[in-house]
Image 1 (spheres, rainbow, N blue to C red):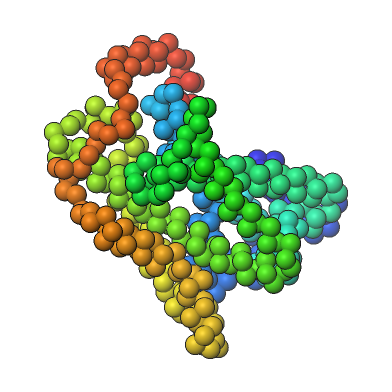
Image 2: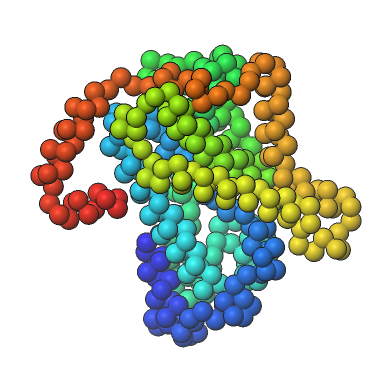
Length: 361
């Protein structure tokens, strides 16, 4: 992806000899424009964006299986930030400079395969031979990586739910190597739904739309609950007389960052409800089409609410006060003062460049 960013800048500046278009600059941001359908158009892509950002939450799941989460977790979180900045924000901005949003080859227009990638289209428009195949290979590797991480995340989540009595006990079976085999098999079975792509373009589009409706918004709800859990955890930690220096890891943004994340996730949910109820061009839609559009945009919310309400009624659980929240179950027994002293001594031996590097990465 770093290579595409560099290549994209070269293409945009007219540095490719085989490209007869010359300097492109930001012309696509003016004609046909950068924001199709204005603010409502921007809000309408929140779910697709959330779906694409899925996977960053794996940092928290992986922390449970690392040898030293105090060391590895901050490094992983910082790397996620830089990857989002470079691989998403910068690369997509460059792609927006090279390809107009109304290009018929993009997804949602005519193509539904790897050839609809803006990176492949940009390279082909620059008349660079060979590289589109390289980008397709990169996309294939990325898809395999997403599949692996999704199996990892879903299987561990199912196993944790089973351990807490919120899923069938068989999902919590762990083999000698520490793998939740039953959960892995169940997660892999759902992965077989990907074979619907062989059923034809219409079936593929419908299936993908509904799976996106369930998974896209659920990620917003997952991050909202993550922020809320962090806020509640810190409140419980304080209410039960614990000190922050007793924590092996503290969020760089603290509780303030979680409040900001909570607010923004709530705003996205509100915007998505608006888009679902009154989508772009709703004036020309029938009532049935508007109802279908709403559930395609907001299906995950009633599903999550239904599961939450049913669980509360079935298990007869109540909302815990900060003073009664369990903050000890599952914690590791570590000698934190000794670890902090060892880290302090180690940092004193670092050169200046390494201190700066570890501060940012």
